[in-house]
Figure 1 (spheres, rainbow, N blue to C red):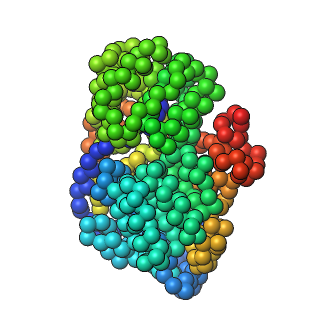
Figure 2: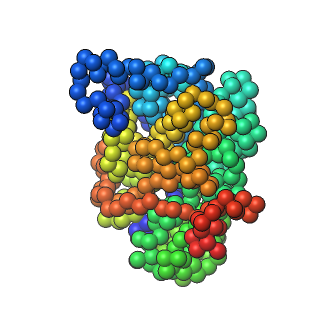
Figure 3: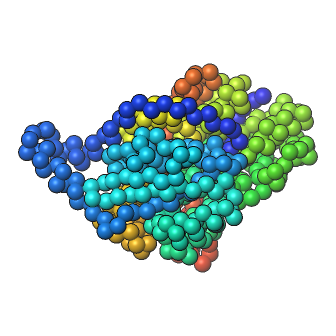
Length: 460
């Protein structure tokens, strides 16, 4: 099977086996500011440091509600967020939480961290990627626990539900890892922020490399917000880079098991490559139908690299391929990522995976926002400092664009060199991109977009 150099997000159901081992934690590294201001570890400097660190004081504990999938169809991605958010809180506050060095949702749903004179309590709830569950647990977190910030969730559809509740309650929401454009597009509200990338950022990271090799395309995606947004983004980005789509985009229900009629349409298109965006277990059936209909014999498959667990299964015949990925643990070179890598495997038995950076970034973002308000956790105060914020995470500098709250961030292009390394060290680094997607706000909020391209990369 030919595999295209890059393209289209593959979110496929998998099972993560998280081996449990817990050696001593690595201390969070000192910040650059601290290293600059305290060049010598003299007795005087050691005396002064605690006074400086004691600057943040909160009248009451800061309460964060983390909603993710711990038991549903996307629980394998929820596991990425659970562990990385807790590690991010540890990094941002400087010490492990109250449950110790490894967080296990089956054993605890709360974890307390302390920074200076400010306590942070993280309440974790499972929504199983179901909007009804998301609504139930979100309201419980707000009405019963009194959370000041919400973080979540895995499913883009469930995230849309969470956005409405956050707006209604005046509580800021940090979205991780859902990717649908609509989250900071047509569903935008002033309380919604994200650390996850959006569909457009995926497409922009892919299409330059893709169109250097292929010129004609057809694409298939699931028929809901994530798939529709992804298809629109790829069509726009690849067309601007010189590609041509020779057939209408094909949308199939997310629960499709027989892809034969869809592959017949793809085969009849005459395209050089077919782009696949899929989230769910149907990808296996999709690939089988492509083989049965001869699609893989006549055109290339456009696919980004995926999570560490599924790479050996779906990319075994693709060694030598260059493609894009939103995060891979050995691609970024910075001290935050070094700390994440050093602390994930000793505690959880696996290296950081596809969405670990999103979870850690969400935690750092939350703590930085509270620091910026000097402990004021009112919704008005928090959203005021979160808009336009810049902070350092495992993917380097994250910039929360003030116009639409999109997280501008690095993404990666890698070359697959093996699928057998036991540490999932599968790649050689090729390049880093930093996509600037268009502003996708609804017409009524278009003025917020300012000088950004509106509605598409071409601004039309």
